[in-house]
Length: 220
Image (cartoon, rainbow, N blue to C red):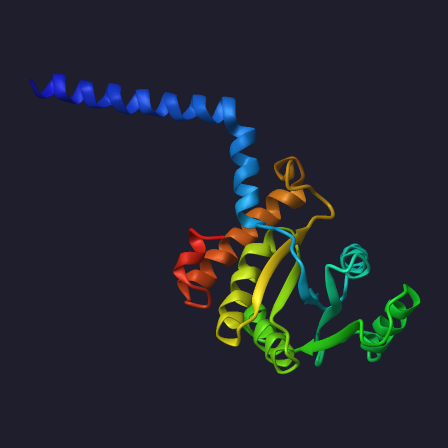
């Protein structure tokens, strides 16, 4: 009797394993596309500003998207976030914000159509960035912001900004962009796979540490 039950359990387990493997085989592309969309939620609607999320250096591809949003009238002001490099051994970048401003104007933006906000690169970096940026924008009456973020960093960034923005009355609209890989085929590029797993771990870390709410796992 025991042998029959054990055999039945093994058969059921093997059947389930085969079913899952077949599901992955036939629908792996759909599944991978959907998990990519999960980490990079996005939409577009009119907002007061577009926040071009920070790093030590601002990417040209992000600037191009930001300019299109401003020139189309979807947002009124481009906010470029610049992570301060105090203490970093970087040559000839002490006037980086001024260079950014000069180049934005050369590309057609006027004073008042852009703002450059410096943020400290302190842990947890994304949450600290959101606190500094949204605090300043709130004082200027901003009530909605498009958040332009690179790749799979989008979900963690969106929820960090949303956590800070909610009590300030600022709605955040996520807008991810991709450079060296695409959202529809990220698993075919080594950089896409690497960023997917790195950002997945960082996202879970932010949830576990309470930097972003638990519901961020389930709600866009």
